[in-house]
Image (cartoon, rainbow, N blue to C red; front, side):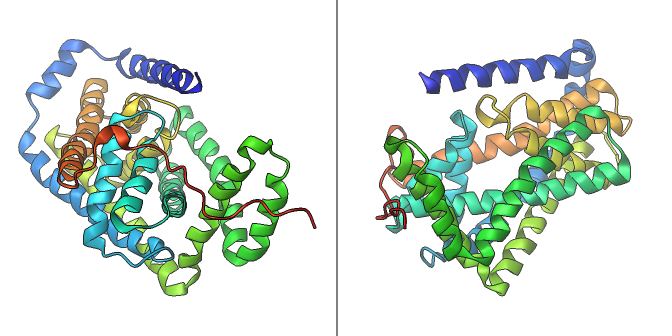
Length: 335
């Protein structure tokens, strides 16, 4: 029942943002933008996007080493499979899929793997928030972008506080988690405790200064390279806005898809990317066409490549479900 509610909420949210995306766009002008685009620019854009994913695989190696030492080349297909699942399944299920595949292929706890995914997503969120906040301050933005920035700041301020606390004192954090989880209903208490502890365990790897530095640098580098991808797609549509606007589009589009929506974040992503480009004085139709095209460059190659990797790994797609096995711990009793 809850799953069906999430699906319907996602469809409504996506439909609402698609309506906002297209309501000021003349269909004939939109078609004109697509007809006159120079699609030769998309080939280097796709190549650079896959390069940015490999940089994320390098980053993930430093995060996952708290669980097991795994080469970046072995992690790259797993990341792609996770992206593919996010593009095809609702409710960001790709994060669970990635944990499942990592556990199956490398014999690690799927709950621990899920914790490393949460750590990676926290670094992504903080990086994107930095991109969006800095560019909005320097370049300006309309009310929608400013509201998105404020909402993201509020969410990630809490996440950052938890991150710093868990990083500085993991043992004390685990004790606090145990006390808080005892307040939850019995049927979900151990599950919540496992999830929280898996996140803290995932943070242990980045407590080392070299690992923290590498994860930070590769986070910024990967997303900055993706901004170059956005710029190349812009060239395909004759858009020559300043690079800062493409950095803003990366931040706005990817933070927006954390909201409930259909698979791949279709709707919120396009609306906020278009909003950024319109703020750079790009015509409505060109900005709308661009937002659809850049999202396709991100979604289509990763989806096709992810399906290929899934096929080569011989893992049936229907068996990919959220990890269920515990970490082997239970909520501690009261002192």
